[in-house]
Image 1 (cartoon, rainbow, N blue to C red):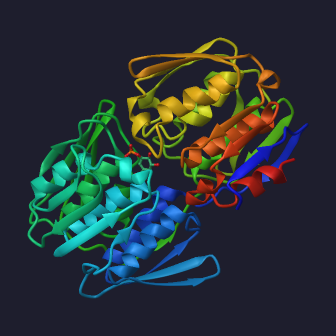
Image 2 (tube, rainbow, N blue to C red):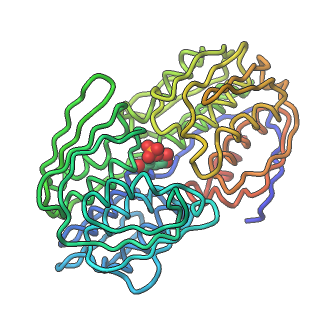
Length: 423
Ligand code: S3P
């Protein structure tokens, strides 16, 4: 794929999109299957490079994969995963590296985890702290322990009780995975409920794991054990559906249907936000339907959309809305594949909106109508969600040029094909 793309506006958009298998479920289906003894089957695995990085790593640690059509089988080694003599390349994928730090912590030997230029800037101290308490040893670059990482795993980890300082599904999951090979139970507390795929899927694979909701938060206790092989069916990815939801609403003449997706509460906060903005958006077992709507501004707090993956797309909705949309407590955006705090503001600003920030909050004064969006040029900064959000803005408004588009392959290789199929 050429690394630059000119997107022309579309007079109308109609049709159905099948978004890829959910990335979070896909990573975990591979990981849990590799930890199990025996053969697991996975249907609908994400075809993105992030999930391929997880698969390659697990294979170099002893798992065996075969593909037949849409079905993947993965066999975990009878005697468990072992340290690989080569570097484990996580590519662009934060979920791969953070979850794998938990897995390799319980595998004897030294593991070297590396990533691309974007991942090499992302902090791993958030997983290093709890995992070192459990008994693994970390070394990385600088104060925030950025990759490359060297992790010395241990077969005698201890269980811990840990309060995650800033709610994160990746940190919670790393501790849970390490907890499988600890000598006793581990408990993780989070102040805001993040996606529960790790807990739910491990329970499905026979692991004893308890969750208690407390206020807006949750405590999860995992007991050590080896998962059993299982059959996994991966639902559609709601975070990818979010791009088409915003597209269907902000484009002046659109009716878009997205296939069925994971509808767990922690994943579809963006739907309530867009409905509150006045969006004609419905979601049920058959999927998500969006059609052109007049949007008005709202206040969005990060806890409504834990993990904040959908914020760049929501900034395009804010740019098309009437009034000032507030994005509150969005500091975590700075630590994603790129600085998405700056990136989300930049998209809205390039479209012609007045934008400003105060601490971890930012504000977008919308133009009231996507037909008023400016033509623009943007560099993705190796961030798939910045590419897709920019493309949604360009096709809805007056076009735009995006550089660094090949990074969409990390999560959604067919994104542009699907986008064009709606013209
Ligand atoms: C993910 C967790 C998220 C999210 C990412 C996927 C996961 O980050 O940004 O796209 O699968 O666990 P947090 O760890 O900040 O919740």
